[in-house]
Length: 211
Image (cartoon, rainbow, N blue to C red; front, side, top):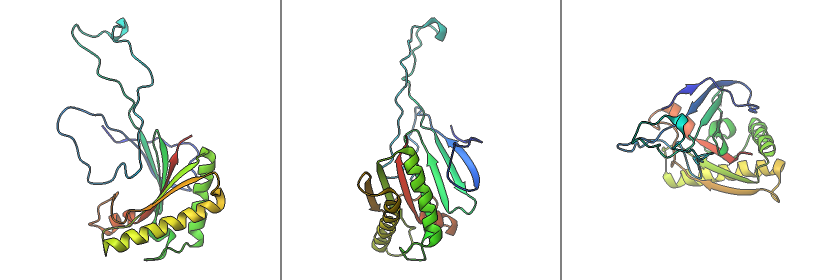
């Protein structure tokens, strides 16, 4: 089940938005569906623990004789918001907040040097980190599948390091635990067969637990 739209998360520190989508899945019998893209990605977790215990004998349930309740769980709900230029993407789940910055928006081609516009975007992420009172941040870099794979891993790690250093200017390093990794072409979020997809895959993600 997917495709519920039209809900806007409160106080999202991005300028203008294109779309908001709530997406969730229900486990059903039969062959497992395998996604071609990294919907969860590295380091992501979900929380599907039922919030309350249901009494299967409660008369209000009106179960037919011999019928039983299926095990309860909470659906993991994900909202996605993207800026007009596609340069920044925010995902909110039950567990964490993830910002994805497209590489060409914040870096020169094949470079790990930040521009002034990139620093402003990263400061906005730092403001949200402060708002959520997060003390653990994951900063992960990714590339498309063009070029040498080892170079992609190295470049993605350099870019993740650069974003982390910029975040640390606003957040400090004494109270924040950073996990920094470069994954190269692993965990694509779009189709590498098109330039639009490759542009989305060239990114740095910053994620942290929700308050």
